[in-house]
Image (cartoon, rainbow over all chains, first blue to last red; front, side):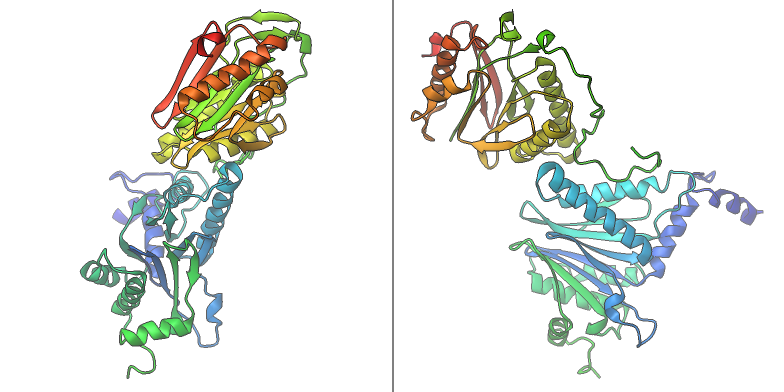
Length: 245
Length: 230
């Protein structure tokens, strides 16, 4: 009986259950948890976005697993959940960034970009025939010389964070971030914390399966770290890698 | 645009509200024009805009002697009405609503460069026909004066003039501008430039209006006689 009732309310995206829930949106959140983790950390010197690229097979080209995307020179997106859904939202965000240039000849603000994107996501929770996005995003970048970090979840609610994790293993990573986050740390400290936090959820994580990018407050530029650079950070923090038996 | 119930990407060249549908060609002799001399001067402390107050039909009949040809469109920016009165008024309303929406959504006002870019896009793609306004404003970067031409050209300068009295007013301004002018000196210079034009340009006359724009806002003053300020 309970089961039947629930089924009736989770068929249509636009239908509330009697207790006020939108099951399809909640299922979309479950889809996010099934994805490997991503995290974002805001430091005084910039924003760090990091993702765990889980590989199904050693034969896959790791570069083809897209979890962190440059949106415009000064802003990037990390995702967790359905990669294909993330690609649609990333392209939406990229076009929004260029619309801002065409309309105002200015770089889009991170808050504006985050809210435009979440407004777009929200429409997929209220439109007949649509399905919500099975992905959560972290939007990080520099706005007026200040690092900003926003989360967009499948309901289309924007949240601003100092440091946050999304996706599978989120609880362990978030706990680590909450324990270790220091608002005074520099970008290098943010990178180290990102690697440690990912390791908190997955002890065997290797630097070559981490995708990490930064947006520096000084240069206001999105920059992806190479595996060699990540290995140096990991060695310094005594994490993973071959030298850790 | 699209019938898709999900709003996708905003057209960068269209207003948020309403659309730029084609307007019919009008009988140009029946259209009120400002003729006009409008002057914008940027100083360290703010921007002074000066205009005359005459509207005319076909440049031969004075249809109004008390037009305020500069209006506030943003907390710290104003735009002049130059060209077709209807086009200019609609242009001002459109930009003002855009500036209001931008500020209420984002919690801070548009920069003057963004406002000038938007104005250029609208002048280029919109139905405002023959308008040639001056945009003056103050933001975190300082004081700015732009002229916007009917094809959407946006040009920034320390001082600029648009309208039928343009050449006469430029003659009075050339060599007199200095970036260290006080607001009072700039107001007096704008008055001299508009005065020079109203003496000989049939499209300009009937007094003087100033907009003084500082980081605190926009103040508009009217004068029946330009000579009050000389």
